[in-house]
Length: 93
Length: 198
Image 1: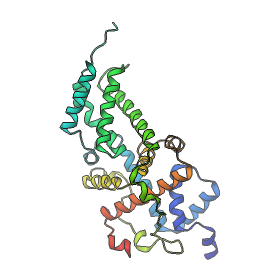
Image 2 (image 1 turned 180 degrees about the vertical axis):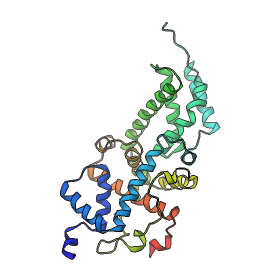
Image 3 (image 1 turned 90 degrees about the vertical axis):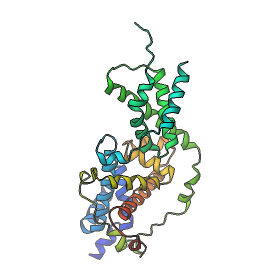
Image 4 (image 1 turned 90 degrees about the horizontal axis):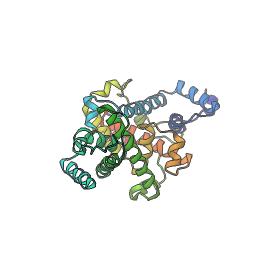
């Protein structure tokens, strides 16, 4: 087991590779070693799941109208509305 | 027929103002900038003409404009040094790992995350915490992270837009993800601060 482990990325390296994998396609030999590591390591598998879930959650903010997501989203203050209104009015004239 | 109809910009503010503001805010994390972007969007809309009609088309048209404004804003700020990015000049401390590269037990054990995003959709408290955690990212990292994770912009495109090398980009994304993951684990999913420091 230990000689296999030496061929594989460490958890620290895995955390970077798992992030990279979300942004670009990694070479096959790296993906293979990651795959084996993930099979053996609960904590890295957990990290992989969490950063992927984070992405899915953030992308939900694009078009979700759920009550939950709305909290993330404030509205324009009255002062700001007034300021924008004046700016638009003056650009009319 | 070509008579210019003066658009009812007051109606725009009421109908689209909040939506556009929120759209901008989750991307720039700065309420002043977001307000300015909304204003610029309406001003640009006044100059332009919309091809389709109907309220949905109007909203879509304005979202299209504000997207451009946000990218312009990022392009502009990419050239200015962002003052509080100095924190990131400090070598990144990967202090969640033991000397042999394994997770420290306490950090690794961030249980309590759900399997599916739907479980969190209606949890108002979660989104409040997420907003706080996003706020703590350094500004440049927040920009990069937002373009990639919310706007689904291509990695190449982001690097070009913000003059980043692929290595820099990768490091920023990695740090941002790790920081957000830890922030959420501690502040929402119930991992204790003490456990992290042990």
